[in-house]
Length: 517
Image (cartoon, rainbow, N blue to C red; front, side, top):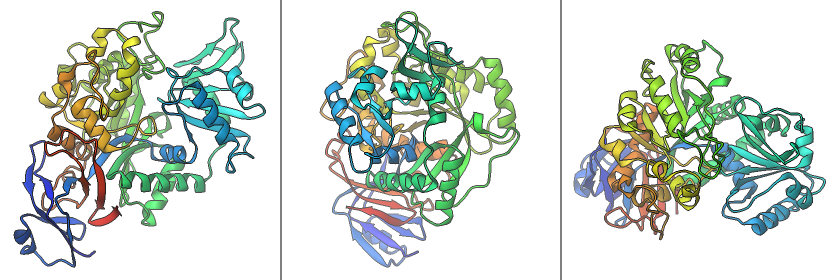
């Protein structure tokens, strides 16, 4: 692989969680960072086949997303996105998509990012809007959906269908299903959904990869099933992956007793994911108190501690790492309790995904769990618009606790959960630092003191992923000897606090320029 010198930039150097050490230039060779420093110093460290003038651009360690769904994101890019739409917008978007050339002959219609707080839907509404079609609209959190009567019938969901364990079928006054399906009850809809072909999955992954590279991402963590894993492995063997993939398998798909498989060149899978609760948007996140707008609900906790330990001990003893989905404070507390009773993994630390509402004494519990906190600051942008009407002020003040975790020594990794939220790492970092979207102010119902400093946010979006993926010895920082993964931007404020004008001008993955504006 040819060598390359990048000069005249503002290079965010240094390692670990420390504030940046600023440099001017970098020498890359054979996919590694060879030298950092001033231009003359770097040039003297070795000859290069090419040199790129950065003209003052900001150079960060390659930004990463610790929690997204790449193939689902690729599907979203190919279908209809309902984010931010009111009822009229939803109706128009669905009608236009259903009658588009790519879709007009399809019986099955899917849409994503429906926001129930902006538009309430039910089966009757979808029946009237798209008669004769099978329609499924996924809520933004992917923990609930709305489907029409045809889909309910095909799934065998009727007035006599009981709620499955861990699932909810919402009903009309007469007991008949109204089309809203939550959590485990969604399995019956998935069972009748048309399966994408291998070609469909590959096209979605490659389309999504191009998109996230343009946003400056160089690595991701993604939960996969057997079909997606097979496509990832094939793309890896064929040299088609240009980002590193840290993949997880759902524990219910694990063949009990089997160890993690061998790593590929860019694809690895050594983590099992466990869902402890649901989501706040679907009122299934497990809370220590009732939801204020539906006092008869406090969420869904899927396991007892004893059952978790019974299932997880064999997995960890076989070498697997664990990733706990835990959003509500009851679920976060359970994850911490269980992790204290499990051994570490040789592949790296266990992790808790979302950690959205911190339980009382949660900081101490997180420290004792020795887990990485994998958080999604971009979610707070939306949460601040509606969550205070759903949970108490006490729980709001315990939401999105980041700064206290970092200061207590808990490793933090930033992700987006795309397509649940935007995968733009610049927006994510801005939200982590400002606790708001571009040009907005934070909601004072949520604790503004929990904002990250700019360097903490950048480290969490780069080194944090590497640590969570167990590859921090290889990547995550701009220091000699590490993988040459870089995100080059313009438009970020000098203090790294304002990312509203940020623009990615180059993405470098293992020393190769994989995106250039």
